[in-house]
Image 1: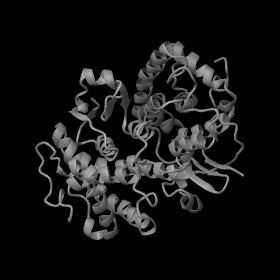
Image 2: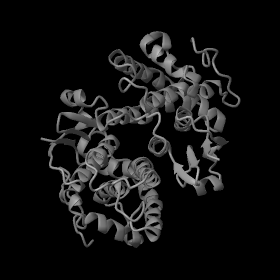
Image 3: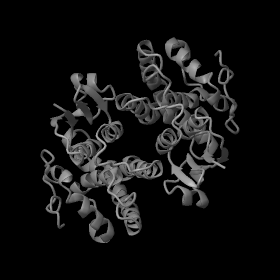
Image 4: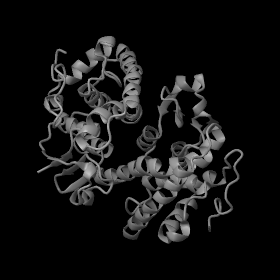
Length: 222
Length: 222
């Protein structure tokens, strides 16, 4: 059986899970507290972090980008990267944007401080980082609005890995209560469309251990 | 004419340049001091950083990963990602390793402090960061040795984007004088093989403005 090594605090693991569901693939989940660096998990992935996919035939695929690219090659329907090299380049540009720029400017400052630190234990949340995340999120929501005014989905006419990537990061920041949806109605409309997909339901129904979700988090009509 | 927007301080821009050369593609180079965020460059790439490729037909491709994936799709010979989904997943795992893990643990601490800060101006190099980079580089050189004891190249029997990615990061750390080659002969042998490729010659012959290269830097028999 196909297995996904997962933790709900990782936006990258969230993305691998959503892509598996978009592809209609069955899988078991094993939750890994990857920051504790368990030996048997390090043997699977020397980088030490989730997600890791063990596909049929004991194919071990480590990391969100390798997993998503692999799944789109091995299980091409429905395609999530686009039909031609130029469209795929635009999808990958936006995947990079959210996995690196949004992650560093918003996810780490918001969900990293308010959720990850609480689950892992250790140092107290840094209020300056939280404020920085809250300030930074506006520019990204404006960018989502700008894109969706011109396109149906972030990278073009079809839903793509760009939408799923952005939505996975936003889901964690939303859980932390740091997405000012009311100020960004176009971004909210786009997120409502992603959130209502069956592939996204396990994300919005999942509770982070010890931290209740905000009331609107799982609401499809938030 | 194909154009690469480039700066020698970026390991990502170095990689895009090496891949273009491995593919045998002609291109002009425009050097961009991307940290100054010039308006005309931001109009090309809203993320604001090099590399950007403008391919024939005015196709604008932003970012090293999108560029490398695009080039391997649009110009498949020679292939740099591998012949099948599992090999490509291994190449992409190692690309991620060097672009994120090595970059954060070594490149930023070494070349970031000693080269980038000097060219950009501003704050003084942080000696603690430099020491951290010097400590961290050993584990990565050991990993390169471990891989090349088992495989011809990092990801398998053929040279791939994994080798080029690792070598581009190492080239900057080597320029900063922070690669202890003598302690890691297997990694050194592997780097000598990459360094001797014609695609890599412009990298080893390039001088960072105002900072002379160490004597061994361009030497193929270092």
